[in-house]
Length: 169
Ligand SMILES: Nc1ncnc2c1ncn2[C@@H]1O[C@H](COP(=O)(O)OP(=O)(O)OP(=O)(O)O)[C@@H](O)[C@H]1O
Ligand SMILES: [Mg+2]
Image 1 (cartoon, rainbow, N blue to C red):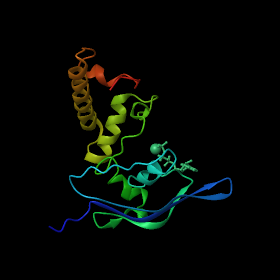
Image 2: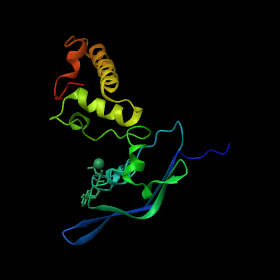
Image 3: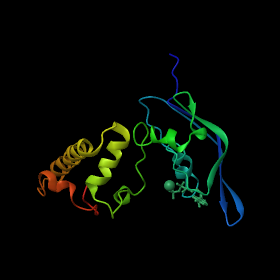
Image 4: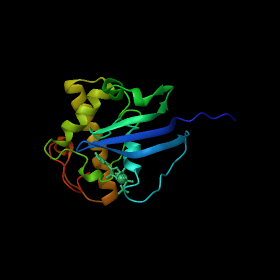
């Protein structure tokens, strides 16, 4: 059967500008990811796994540039995406679980507000409706936590009020 990859990266090159110097972090990296497949990238620390894969969610550090190659996703080259293009993809179709997921939430913003922002972006819900959906999402996460840890804590709306902290979700 002729299968088409979901993501096809070809000869990707990434360069960082650092104190007036150019550093080639990624040289001609390619991969094809197919539906239903789990693909592992293995390599020593500093070999470029994070830098390479951050380009699949448009999250390359500000001093980094894709200087070569292409990354095809749904027929479009992600290396040419604008920030507006990314808003329709990042977190909605392609998501990234960071190396240290416990610190991925902003500790200065309430959990409910952070989930609400994502829902507003991706589901076209605004204000109260988004807040309600965030509440439901957070509650579902909390229920999962309770099931996993067999412990009982806040209920209902209270689950949205805390600020994120280690071990919370
Ligand atoms: N913003 C940046 N500016 C300059 N160099 C960078 C930047 N980000 C990453 N690098 C460099 O790019 C290279 C690849 O780093 P990367 O974080 O992708 O490695 P990794 O394979 O994910 O390592 P680990 O297994 O430790 O997570 C490293 O030499 C790193 O120092
Ligand atoms: Mg890494």
